[in-house]
Length: 100
Picture 1 (cartoon, rainbow, N blue to C red):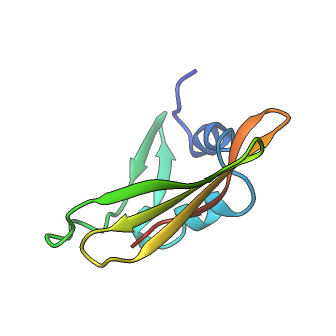
Picture 2 (cartoon, rainbow, N blue to C red):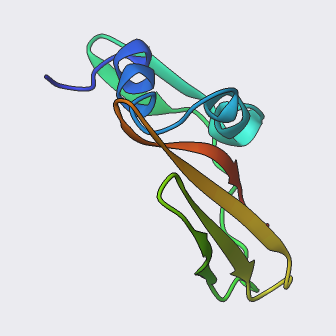
C-alpha cells in the first residue's frame, strides 16, 4: 500500500530498524514529519552544508549474525557506525549512528 500516514511510514521502517533507532532518527526539528489528508509532509529541514563532501561507508566486520559498517564524513572526518543483525525475520539495523 501507499505510505500516506506517519504510522504506515514507521511500520515500514520498523522492518529495517530495531530498538530506539527510529526515535533517534526522527527526533529534533530537522526531521519533523506529519501526515494530513492522505499525504506525508516534512515540515522543516536542516538545509545544506556547503562544506559537506560526502560520506564513505566501509564494512569493518562481517559474521554470520552481524554486519558492522563505519561511515566517515569528509567535511568533518567524524566516524559513525551502522550495525545490522540477522534476526528470525531477516536483517535489522540495531545501531545507526550517522558520521556527522
